[in-house]
Amino acid sequence: MKVWFITGASRGFGLEIARQALERGDSVVATARDPRAVEKALPGGGDRLLALPLEVTDEQQALQAADAAIDRFGRVDILVNNAGRGLLGAVEEASDDEVRAVFDTNVFGLLSVTRAILPVMRRRRSGRVLNISSVGGFTAGAGWGVYGGTKFAVEGLSEAMRAELAPLGIAVTVVEPGVFRTDFLDSSSLHRTGRTIDDYATTAGGTRTWAEQNNHAQPGDPVKAAAAIITVADSSEPPTRIQLGADCVARVEAKLEVVASELAQWRELALSTAHS
Image 1 (cartoon, rainbow, N blue to C red):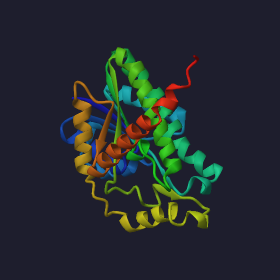
Image 2 (image 1 turned 180 degrees about the vertical axis):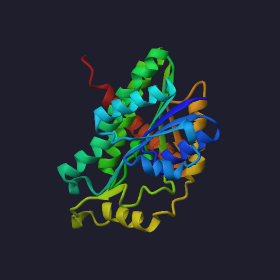
Image 3 (image 1 turned 30 degrees about the vertical axis):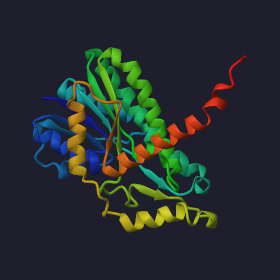
């Protein structure tokens, strides 16, 4: 039996991971802004479910949630940093407040929760950290610059954490979902910039149109994604990154080709910058 600590567990990936973990007999600390939504969605959790209020940007609340998890279950084996929000719009269109709100949740919130849970894992020299990123954390597109920026930050932090925590028996994996049929494109998760600029009508504007047309019609199955994430958590040698969805795999492969091509094209100039 493992003990999971999941943020953003009232819907989407977080809820489905919690559901499947409970179904296989694990215990789950499921956190959300409204824990009643978790309890309603997971009525059969019983004593193995602890639903807690957590606004990830509130570091004190994160510490309290960690303490409550230890009081109930004695340990945390797997941390899933899933809570997040999106922002759709060209980089120039985004206001300072809009940018900071996304970074507060996706980056600083993740850090607050991670700082609260890692001491528990370090004491036992055991644990798994799964940071939910996005294909947008590996390759950014028009309209997703700010959101992608937060996920690029998550990927960089995760790579460093993997190196720092591996000697302590803790494995860190970045999860990169592609387009999945969750509520992410709803206004409750994906915010739009308050300003639009006509010059971006065919780039970021086209992405806005795509989001409106594809909400709840995305090809990815969150039930299968949750099962894949649990498989990674169970692995004795979890990867640094796991891509989820055919669209994600294709975009990652395409970027790797472009990077390799540009590196070869500009290699001599890059190497020419050393002291002679």
